[in-house]
Image (cartoon, rainbow, N blue to C red):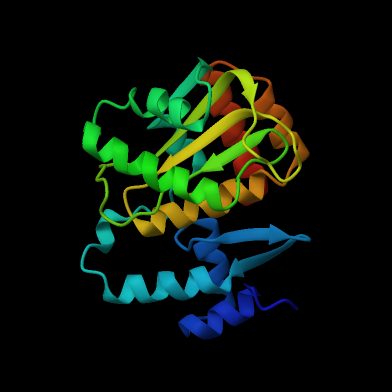
Length: 221
């Protein structure tokens, strides 16, 4: 098996607990980075290692919500319809300008980090871009936010598949662990045709969050 992923047994051995304990942790969502592949639970090995180290050495573990779901981040974020801009720079200005609890200088740093990452390789695939800046103290927010912008007109984000971008997800995390959790879960959902079709329906905020919650719970628990 590709050792990018760990089995339930391997994680149990790493944490020195029983496999039953790992399954209980999955059910209670007290262990992050669990995804189903081929009907079996798997864990990203690198991210689990980071989580274990952070959990053992961090003095502010209570500040991290290990049970956080995409729906939670959406509820604390924004859904923007008919977002405008001639390019990624202008689009991010519009999106970040709608967040009241982030000062202008921090918003500028977020934009710079995000654009730098996107300049290396576009995150856009199948018309959906998933952007996220690094979490390195450039900004501070109390709750992790996932923003969704439905573009007024498709834009050329230099996607590998050459499909123009219609929708942008922007993840602003309150800490590294929550960033990794939401990133892992969203990337997994973006592998599902049903989820992509749901996103492209551009439902109203309430319906969108309800539908995301349903799919996320069904696929990831």
